[in-house]
Length: 215
Length: 74
Image (cartoon, rainbow over all chains, first blue to last red; front, side, top):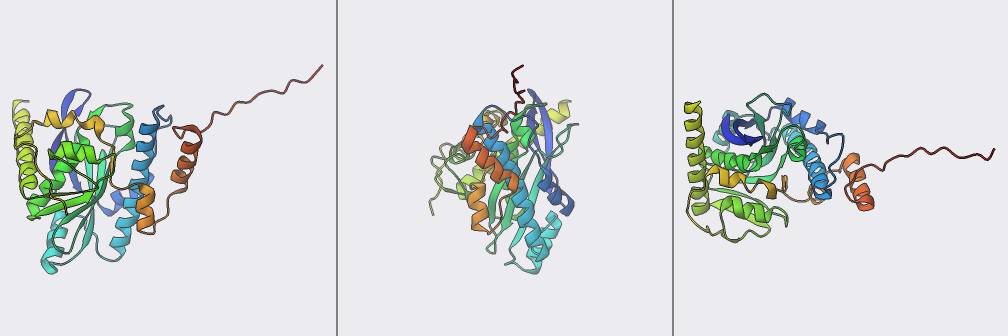
């Protein structure tokens, strides 16, 4: 799988790609570090350390599943596993990378599980500490892009439901991103919400292709 | 299970979705400590040290070290 999605970098449109993490990439997540000087804003500092800790936890959890033969490293691998055992539960890490030349090699990650009943459970996703700190480049749209690409993955696999947990800090963001009335401590992207997300995803992809054709 | 209700079926341009980026908590998922506890994982020493520093001085930065010379009476 190699989907591309638009992001905004220092006010200009750029493209990023998202793919399944290889074993090497998953191991490298444990080496995310904060910038040398921490931002003054305690909330941003907290975001940085939470992102680093989640990258490390994702790396740990994925390797745990991998040892058990229940982690996938590609879309083909996932399709094969589901074909062999429709009730298989597998873990995967999606990695978003910049397509333009950037000092940041990974923009963000998402740790997901395909559950036994063919749903996708988004355990968490995090953006890279340097994307959060906005030191060298101001990169926007990574969160929205990752969420839409998870919907794209669900659409590709014909998964009827993507679900996850929302906290007091993320509930409002999910509400706005999904365009729904209220998100409490969990969310289910399914039926009309899934259809709407797919429509918005297709519109943004068409916009990206049109921009590419113009350039 | 609470079904989500769409506010509107209007297809929003990607720029509108980007505008919400400031509100992104950067980490969407449970609290790392809660997550680690749920799955029996250990929090890293760095993160635990950050939480300790955060409780002490707000943004979790290391304390500035100042070296002062002791004044010795002549």
